[in-house]
Image (cartoon, rainbow, N blue to C red; front, side, top):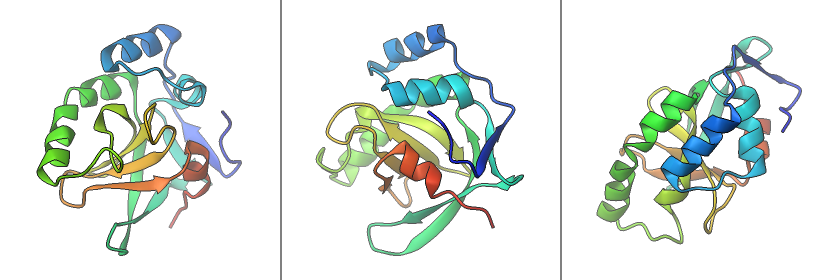
Length: 158
């Protein structure tokens, strides 16, 4: 996995192979080669474009648009700790009657932390390798890219 040339990552704390195995055991997921490569190179770091913060655009189901600043790429500890709260997303999905054809919560792995939300990578299932914006419940779960590569290419700075 290589980043688009416009993006650099400051102070990464890459996962070890042992940490990858530990997270796979915890989540029950098999990480794609792309995800393993990403985490073993860039985990815990802060992505920048020419030294400035990166932003992602989000187009919500109703068609309105927002953006959000990327705080950091998730670290080993943050992925492990965030996974413990995956049940919240299952309750959210159940409450709003969101079918598996739209969202398979059990395959969504936190990959980037936003200001109050997160970006999730899908490892397995119907939506494998897709990227989703997941907020704290107010704006739902929205597909934002067909791949990690597409997601990274679309980052921008203000």
